[in-house]
Length: 403
Image 1 (cartoon, rainbow, N blue to C red):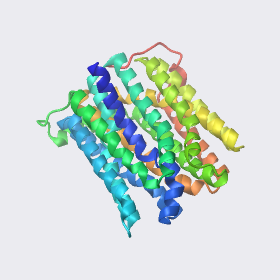
Image 2 (cartoon, rainbow, N blue to C red):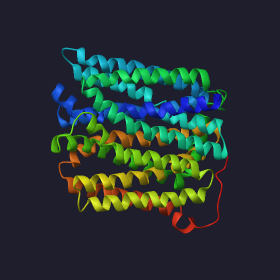
Image 3 (spheres, one colour):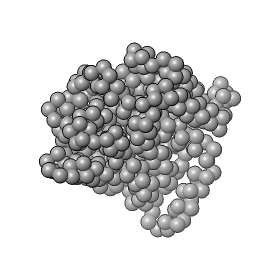
């Protein structure tokens, strides 16, 4: 029972991280009108959360390797609560409300640096083998489930007032904080006796030695999140301004692609176990689905076709992300896992941060937007397939990830 509560508590961390941006996506048009913002300023509401997180994740990973993950997670959740309160209070500021909102979002982002990444690293510390794969899959499910429910929560909150959504963060972070303190045990981490210089030399050496397999995984994971949040940003404005759908029903429009990703992520996490060959096969399927669906969207992107293709494409992403999580988390020993996973976390957050900003520019020329996305997928997909030699070994003998 305690192990289940531990997994639930760890699962709340990626869910809270996802709430950080996904809950605000349906609110962006309302926030833009209320605060009289430009398109770029509006996109920065999401990036102000993701960029600080991306910049802080490596430091958090290093500190967690040396001083313990649980302690860093607790500090991170407290930061998220403080940032949420500041962001929520920004609406009461007569002047400079946008600046106050940005300040709160930056503090939230700093706190978010210690959520998903450390949950993955701590899972790698505490669990091994098939159990590790299952728990990592569950974390990705919480991540996906957060993306599903967050837009509905945000859109529903907007029916009252746009800043009501910010009061959800302290409640969620507070629940996670209680669970982490009571049910999560510390994993094995490094010792302070190892100098920072020696630690970095050893950790960077691991990354360098495994760069041919790690770098394409980093890139594809970050690209998946870049496309996901960029498309969600685009959909938020498309659904409201073009089709005049708002409120709760606007939030449910995100349910199909995000729900598909969540369901497939859960299935993948349960099936892959420690089977590297199966992971490679599923990555081929996932990357192919993304590639084909975005290829179709370069030709036709009416709303029904758009929603169908995005549902299938992000269902494909549900095959890819759990496999990447397992491969990266198992690539290093306990002492350096925080550093390795933190690099991946940084790339993921950069994808989340850049998606809305770049799609804000791209979405004014929709066909080009889908062509650019298609070309990025082609480059990333071919890279990972070539470097990991998936095409030649996917049907080969079954291998097992090292425990």
